[in-house]
Amino acid sequence: MKKRVRVAVTGGAGQIGYSLLFRLASGEVFGPSVIVDLNILELPIAVKSAAGTAMEITDCAFDTCGEINCYDDATKAFDGINWALLVGSTPRGPGMERNDLIMSNGPLFVSQGKALAKASSNLMAIVVGNPCNTNALIALSNCSEVPSSRFTAMTMLDENRAKAQLALKAGVAVDQVKNIVIWGNHSSTMYPDFENSTINGKPTTEVIKDRKWLENDFISIVQKRGAEVIAARGKSSAASAASACIDLVKNLNTGKGNEVFSTAVLTNGEWYNLPKGLVFSLPVKAKGQGSYEVVENFKLSNFAKEKISLTCKELEEEKKVISNLL
Ligand code: NAD
Ligand code: LMR
Image 1 (spheres, rainbow, N blue to C red):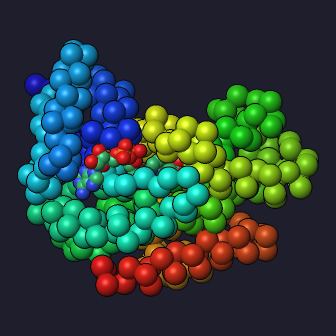
Image 2 (cartoon, protein in one colour; image 1 turned 90 degrees about the vertical axis):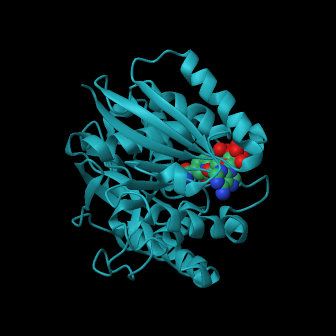
Image 3 (cartoon, helix red, strand yellow; image 1 turned 180 degrees about the horizontal axis):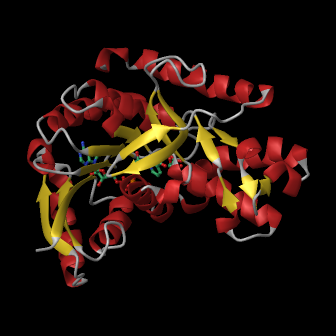
């Protein structure tokens, strides 16, 4: 008998869902010997559309695709799941910052946190819906039955963007860029840490000698990439976001060969002098099946510390705004 894994995807009828669900069902994440059951959660008005997506997934005839269920009830959608991919929520439009969504999207993570509390305590929840760090804080605060360490907010798209930009600048393949970590908020204050990264095994600063480009252009490109995509497409990133989510689930599930990657986790007051109680993107190593450890030996220059303190302040401000939801 093949093993089974049950994955809930919220907002399955949306843009990201339309890419993410197919890739989950295809077997590329959990491997060819694991059957993937999908629980899609949508708003009542979008359940019919989600059912249409489910029909298409069935029509792909993936060997690894199990049951596909569509729900408009979070408790039913989360029953018995191993993974919760919390995508469903409104995206920003042109000219908005992601935290402009906080009052409209925040409350739905209260109810989803409560619904997750009734599901298995062994699940892993990834928050994609924006502003994802603070939404993850809301969800985990409303879900005392699941350990907070089982919640994370996705900054993998930012890591992928940073990696791709460094590879383009250095004229190398992306797999030559390692250890590129995003610190802080998935927002325009995030800090993509080029100082600890390497290209072809050498410090990035030795390969790309244009420090001005690294400190200014590179950081700004990564921080503003989401807005640039919105300005160009008229809609926020979708396939790249789904791809980053696939990368993150794979990394957390299998360990990424002991490599460091970025994801936002609840701070404990002990890492890098960060205050306790923020969902903050940090360097992590996966231990498999969703568990991970924060890598604590990154060296931070004064330049890095200044950037990290800015993104930390922003997260503290966001936390104040939604304190009634925690
Ligand atoms: P979309 O509007 O295309 O789809 C969102 C879907 O969520 C819709 O089908 C909607 O009906 C559904 N939804 C809304 N509220 C829901 C609820 N309470 N329960 C279940 N479903 C619900 O949006 P999208 O482009 O797929 O983006 C989704 C979210 O992901 C947005 O908040 C966007 O900003 C965010 N995002 C995050 C990242 C990241 O890197 N963290 C990247 C891209 C997008
Ligand atoms: C992104 O980074 O592309 C997403 O968070 C969508 C956005 O609003 O920028």
